[in-house]
Each structure stands twice: as structure tokens, then as C-alpha cells.
Amino acid sequence: MELPDIESMLTDLEDKQARIRELGEESRARRFTATSEDGAVTATVDGTGKLHDLDIPDRELRAGDPSPLGRKIVAAVGAARTRAIEDANSRFAELFPEFEE
Image (cartoon, rainbow, N blue to C red; front, top):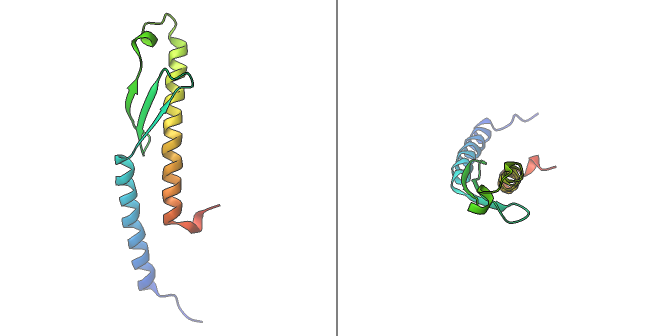
């Protein structure tokens, strides 16, 4: 029985670790934007899901009941984060095709 080439495996592992670090850096630089269903609120997150911008028109801020605005904010941020997650999953799958379902 032939033993695995440990040196080659370690080199491959180090290469993949470096690429994962690069993906992390790239994710922090990427931006994903989404808008609430009615177009009133727009959120922008980075590739890690961190919120970078939230655009809310004055008319929404002046509305009497804050509940609808809260739902719009949650929807816009959630949709932007979904885009970021889908992008990260896609880029990760390219690096590790063996983990695709």
C-alpha cells in the first residue's frame, strides 16, 4: 500500500488556507445592496453581512407608527445579507468543489 504524499497534502492545505484568508479580505471589500419591497428602505452590507449604509427617506422617519419602518429595515438588511451569503457560498464552492451538495 502506497503512503499518501504528506508534503503535497501540506502544500495544498497551506494554499487553501491562504485562499480562505483572501476570500475573507475580498468579502469585507464587496458590497451588496437590497431594497424593501415597497422601495422605501435601501440597505448595503459587506460580504460578511456587516451593515454599511441604510437609506431611509424622511417621509418614512416622520410616519407616525414606527412598526412598518422597522419591518422594512429588517427586510432590506435581510435581503442584502442573503445576497452576501449566496455570493460567499458560491466563491467558497469554487475553492472547495468537493463540499458542494
